[in-house]
Length: 629
Image (cartoon, rainbow, N blue to C red):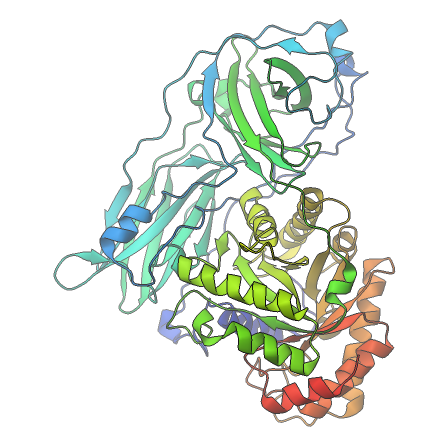
């Protein structure tokens, strides 16, 4: 990604953001611990437009033709865990979690009766959601012949020097990719292998894509590996701390033959279901795919055609709280392969209002690790709420997920979260669910939406969803790939929650980075965002610099104007300002906080959200309190 004249400074942003997100130790890594850069060979796939013309025999039809991207999948759901790791417990928990909305696919293979041209002419482009009925011209569902399971039960293991790694065989995702999680264990000196929560390990693979996972997920370092390639994948794990060591695991090629053809779904909120299927090899002779929705009576309605290169389809016509079933057919020019998948959509999103993010706000992030300096145990819910009320803070953005990892990862953290949500509700403080996307996968988006829908036993919850959309190795990647992923994530999120739900896009500040729409997709994000929130951390770079009022005021006011200009519409802007020391350049002075608040309000911002709660000094809290928005 091009950063005009700011490459070194942008690297500092990435490092410090990783520190605050729990991805890196404070300060730079030792030189010996820095691994050589490796780039994934996976290339992005182009998405065909929904209105693309079909062949002559289908000229009267308008089908959604979607070619799945190269974006990759996620891991298991929240599982109750103790914060004290043990080898037996981690081994028992690893890979057991299943998504609440996911249903194990039933794989079938049979001969499918062909539609006549007259029948095809009456097939709608996309049938309305009718979980127990039919739409348009339907075809009777053929009998299914069950196929053999495609996944063995035992994990794959490899032991190296001081470290071992293991992974389950490939799982099919709703993105039409193959996924596994590789988990690292360490020699405890007696020959036994144990998890280590705070160990540092780098993972790489020779094909596909490898993304490090939060260590709290398995209580030990792990990574997600995804691929569409019909070939074996070699995964390397190198321990940087506590001692050097490495291990290599070769994952066998995922099944790509018609006998292994399968389908799966991922529910993303009440209005979006993603249907994925096995990416068959070229040698299978697949000519395309057909997606049917199946009624409760077994009647099938054709709702999408996809090319031979497509491996997923998004159903945006589903309704909240509905049961759906899909047949996916691979057209093999004779004996077709068919797979079945089901989905249950959640209830409708709660009513929201843009006023929930107006005025003064504060970011707060926590971790489930009691030894971490940002542990949830550091924040007493009653004290957090009392401080917000005293300072006139009307809304708090609370980080609840990062990629597919939910921060409330065990019962103790969930109990703390419930206390905070209920206390904030009683005090009239609005909480915004803050999510940090890592890839534009169905599972990643679904985690964000699920957390936004979280409710306590008392029925209290979040007043909106803020998506922290960042480029970088640990987030959406770089360059054109990152731009496509970020824009696609926003589109999926909006499709999932509906047109009226409060969806906040936390974006890179164009004032600080000099980004344009060629560097970062502001205008595409703005199509789906209720509010744009530029991260204007003006104190991030310049050490030992005395900031004049004009310095701060210009930064904060121009962040509002530039964001709105790049958005291409008069979108509401909420400034993400700085109240803590983020880059070892010192925290802004109390006067600076007041200058930024004043400039942002004068420029037409609807409010300002300060980063962050823990790092704000008593003097900073007083300055925020003294400014009346």
